[in-house]
Amino acid sequence: MADLDDLRKVVTQSCRIIGKMDMTREPAGHVSCRIPGTDRILIKARGPGEAALRYVTPDDLIIVDMDGNRVDRVLVSRTPEGSPRPSTPPASEP
Image 1 (tube, helix red, strand yellow):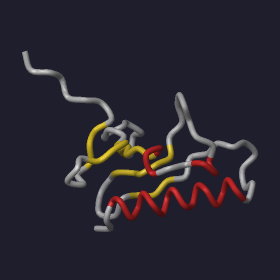
Image 2 (cartoon, rainbow, N blue to C red):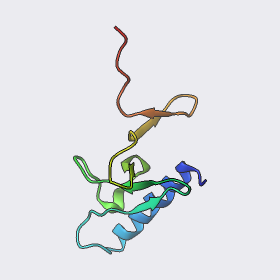
Image 3 (tube, rainbow, N blue to C red):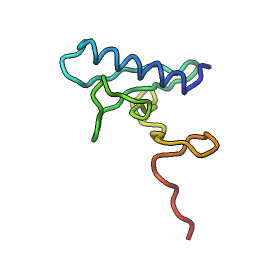
Image 4 (cartoon, rainbow, N blue to C red):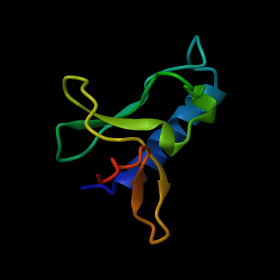
């Protein structure tokens, strides 16, 4: 299976090329890639704070299943060891 970080880079670069070349009517779009060997799709999503295609970063991408249900958490940072860190902190222990 292709490395997810590599797929994120490819989709991000594709978004930026499409945006820079004005290949859409609006600055937004849904560039996507099926994650090989899975029933998951890596997609540039829309929502609050959406970046225009020419400004997309890997953090703007999410993973959905074939029904469009989000099945990941957007990763916005990494731990000091380089591991992905979810965008929302885990619930605190009582």
